[in-house]
Amino acid sequence: MSLQELDPKGLIRESYRIEGITSGECRSIFLDWALSIPMDHDNKSAIESLLEHYAPENAEHPMTEVLNQGLISMTSPRRRGGWRSRERN
Image (spheres, rainbow, N blue to C red):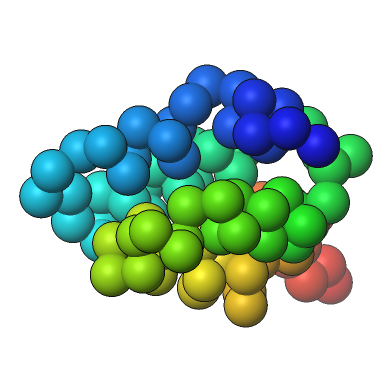
């Protein structure tokens, strides 16, 4: 899969270009990116591909840290909360 397909809005690419970007801002961008990729895409392999492309030259960048965290903790998005998840009597 191409980088254009992995990051169609260019959110991850642009985050690496922003000087002085913080981890919090990178987390926000990552969330926006994660919500914009199609549900049928494998999130783990998408993050791995992004890291493979960006991390070698940006090892200390906050987005690299966020992507690594996402790789560890991200699974396919699931609905949590709402009336369906509450116990019923």
